[in-house]
Picture 1 (cartoon, rainbow, N blue to C red):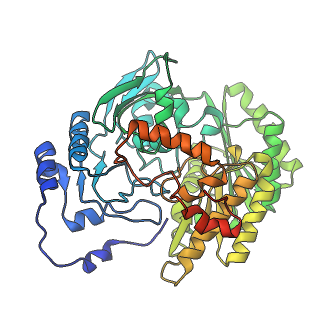
Picture 2: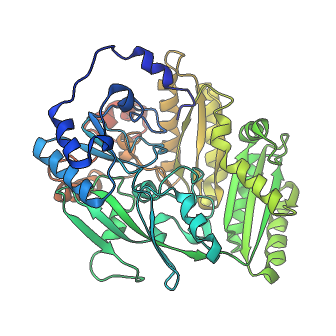
Picture 3: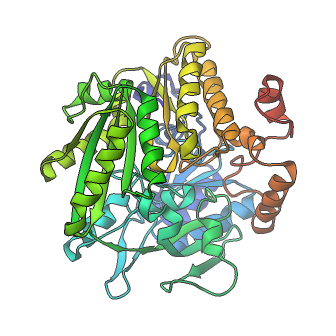
Length: 492
């Protein structure tokens, strides 16, 4: 992800007067002129997400209904034009990049809470609804929507569904798929269907589960039935301070080994701590090599017992200090610091690249040590801030895209981290998806036969291949060319 401003690109655009093509004229007929963007400057603003890759669409459409989405897809099919869904553009794997141009379908105008069913603890929302808005809407009823990515103030629930997003508080409650009970979908042939429902289970194939995490490659989500969860009676937030990253990692494993499962368990290293504190005082000690931010929730009577057990495990694993947030204001500051970590890193480096991998909790000390070694070998600073409770790593590689060759070295370092995660028995993504970024690394964890089965599902639902092309699946031969010679992947 780059922290660099992009507005100066406008000065480099050709000073020609563009004219509407036939595709844009037909799109105008479906959505009206106010629902279609086609001028170069407008298209430039949609050519990137939070990853490194960029590509420009022929047109960006802003539908307000599933009927309009269906009509757009049918038009794309008639013209042989690819299309890609986009939420808020906060994705970190290139999933919303229109790699072959075509039409980019932005859901920013489909952003309503359509229904709150208090009796069944369900909400029906449109895909463009910002994640945090749902919890805010149901807070007066002492309810919440659990999946809480760090970007929850900006990211959308439709995007969360596409990537199966997680967040700090999904350690105890599960990720997006565990809180998505049904979907309204427009299939690649333009048909609109409903999957799942408000009930806990539906007969037949789990089509909802198939689509959650499919990264927009099998159809476009136009509605979501989400699970709501009561707010806890009591919450305690602890900050444990460590002299080494290894000690903090061992404390994480120690908690889980003793069957202590907090609501959230986050880790930050010194580089991230210093960046956060330079931005605003969140309460993290800048001399600590690592901190754990731990949250427990439940009945008021049991909070002290849980907090004391966590503090004991941390001290047994070398914690220098364990503090409990004294009030809601201090708790809010700590969490604001954690959730603002990526932005804080952006203030200390021209660019940064976010890596997303998963490892078994028991492998955290060894994997973090290897990430440190990769930093030394590459000459690139790497900060670590991540969901320690479920082993979901987010190394942040600092670089300068203006230095020749540094972007390539950064991507190479990210691929090396993915190899380490795979060798530790982990996975290539915990919540950010494969997208364009890691598709050629898929052979690190999948055999050719595994990928072939996935491609058969894709071909069955999207035979023309127009729906978010060039995502998730390896480019034939490319993975061998890029990584096989370095021992990073098998050839495919």
